[in-house]
Amino acid sequence: MSIGSYAQGQVELIQRSDYIDPALYKEYGVKSGLRNANGQGVLAGLTNISQVVGSQLVDGVKKPCKGELWYRGHEITKLVESLGDELGFEKIAYLLIMGVMPSDDELAEFKKILGEARRIPPHFTRDIIMKAPTGDIMKSMMRSILAYSYYDNNALDTSVGNSLRQCLELISVFPMFAAYAYHSYNHYKKGGSMYIHMPDPKLSAAENLLSLLRPDRKYTALEAKVLDTALILHMEHGGGNNSSFTTRVVTSAGSDTYSTMTAAMASLKGSRHGGANLKFISMMGDIREHVNDYYDRDEVAAYIEKIVNKEAFDRSGLVYGMGHAVYTLSDPREIILKEYVKQLVREKGTFDADFALHENIEAVAPAIIQKHKNLALPPAPNVDFYSGAVYYMLGVPPSFYTSIFAIARIVGWTAHRLEELITSNKIIRPAYKSVMKFEE
Image (cartoon, rainbow, N blue to C red; front, side):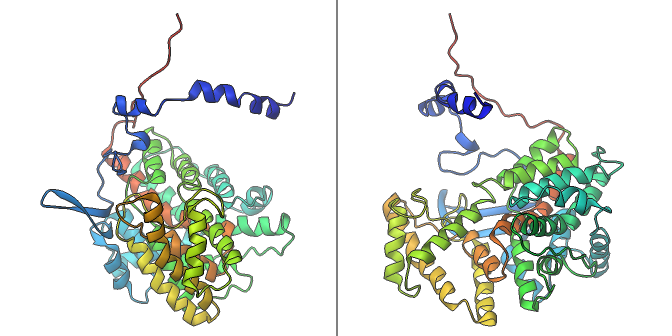
C-alpha cells in the first residue's frame, strides 16, 4: 500500500477522533477563530501602526458606518488624494515603517536605499528560482526568501536595526522574486518565452514591477499610478489580519526575519486570506461565460441568484468580492480603486463591457445576498472586487495576483515585526481547553 493510499484510508478515523461539538465552544466561552459572537476579532494586542473602522458607538449603541482605514494617524482616502500624480509607494512605506511622514530629503534617501538594494546575488535566479519552476508563485517566493537568508552573514540577528535592514532588502527584491518566478514557470512549464529583465534602481516599485513583467518593459504613466495605488492600499490592514498576526506570533517566538516573512507568506497565500482574490477572478470568468449581455442588469441578477442558491459556479453559495469581516457599509479601498478602474477603462478603450458587468454585479449582488442570507445589512464590495479588475486590465496573469498582494503587504509585516520586537517581551501563547475523553 502506498503512503498516499494509507493516508486516505485513515481520514475517517481522524475525523472521528478530532471532531469537537460546536456547542462546547459556547459552553466554555471559547472564541472560535479568535472572534467574538458579532464576528469582530478578540482584542489581542495594541498597535500604533494602523486602524480599520467599520462601526462606531452612537449613544452607547454600536452602529455601522462608512469604512475607514488609517495608516499612522492618516486616513487612507486623504492620504491617497494628497499624493496627486506622485507614485507614493515608497513615501507611504516610510510612513508605515518609521511612523512619520518623510521630509523630501528623507524620502530621497529612502528611495535610494531601496533602489540600491534591488539586486539579488549572482546565479540566484538560475540556481534557486529557475530550477524549481511552479505556477504557485507564492510558494516560489517563500523558497526564495529562505534561500536569500543563506547569503546573509547576520541572518539570525534579531536586533531592531538588523531586522530593519533585512526587511528593507526583502521589500526591494520581492518584485524580482515574483516576476522571475512567473517567467520561469511560463517558460519551463507553459512553453512560453522567458524574460529576465534587470530592475532599474531609479524606478519606483510599481514601475519596476510592470517593467519586469512585460516583454517590452513598456507601461503608461496611468498604469504605473494605478498599480502604485493598489500597492499602497494593500500595504497594511490592522494587526489582526491573519498574516500580520502570524508575523507577530513568529516574531514573539524569537525567530529570524526570513523565517518570519516566510510564515507570513504562508498565511497570505491561503484561500481565506490573500488567495481569496483568485476565487473572485475565477468567479468573474464563470460569470462572463454564462451571462450573454453584460449590460443587462436583470440577466446579471438572475445568474447571481443561481450562485447564491448554490446552483452555479463552485456551489458554495458565496459571491466573492462581497462582504468583509470589519467593514459594514463600505470598504474605502474598493471605492478608491473603482475610480482608477474608470480611468483605465477610458485610457484603454477596450473594457467598457467588462466594467459594466462589474458595476451591475455591484448593484444587484448585495440585496440578493442580504435576502438569501437573512442579513441585517447588505454586504458591501471589498477590495478584491476592483483590485482584480485592475490587474486584469493591466494584463497581469491570474497566478500573479496574490504575489502583488505580498509585494505590498511585506511593508505592513515589517512595521508589525519591528513593533513586536520593540514592545513585547513575551511569546504569544493563547490557551486551548482540553475536551478529550480519558480512558479508564
